[in-house]
Length: 188
Image 1 (cartoon, rainbow, N blue to C red):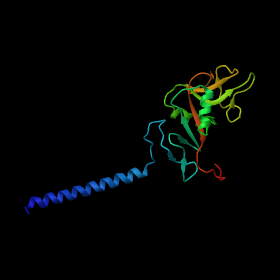
Image 2 (tube, rainbow, N blue to C red; image 1 turned 90 degrees about the vertical axis):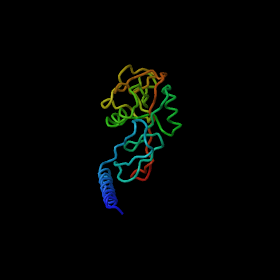
Image 3 (cartoon, rainbow, N blue to C red; image 1 turned 90 degrees about the horizontal axis):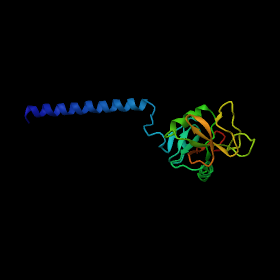
Image 4 (cartoon, rainbow, N blue to C red; image 1 turned 45 degrees about the vertical axis):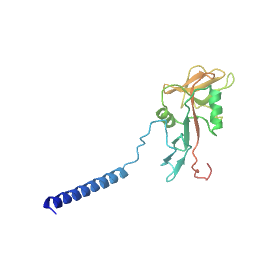
């Protein structure tokens, strides 16, 4: 064998070892960083690690977005408030009931656009208060609703606030349900 063959072979092996070392170093670096979800907002994966409950996965259906102990689904089409509510019921969920500002901020982040979206808040009779679809009253020290509070008014998130709208307007909607992870008491 000519001497240059041995030199080329040695350099080739050295290059392979350097490349292998670089790949291993990158693998170690990548494993040390928390996963950054590279997907488009509103196009969720079906599962995500849950850090709020320790080990275990959030069990949300495909196309639902996991957050804390809930799963969220954003419609593509637009419907009246009652039809959005009925669609959520068919999905064994309900229109969105917002508990706090952290949840409101999360909803703002997953919305695909800034068009209004129905949430589970409405007024059904004259003189009544804003009521969530779970039967609880709106905490007006936490959230206020802009616009008239009239009979058959429904609420939508619009421009980072809750807005009173006519229920027979076509908007997208957001459904919400508990994730499939067992709660600490053993019930879901």
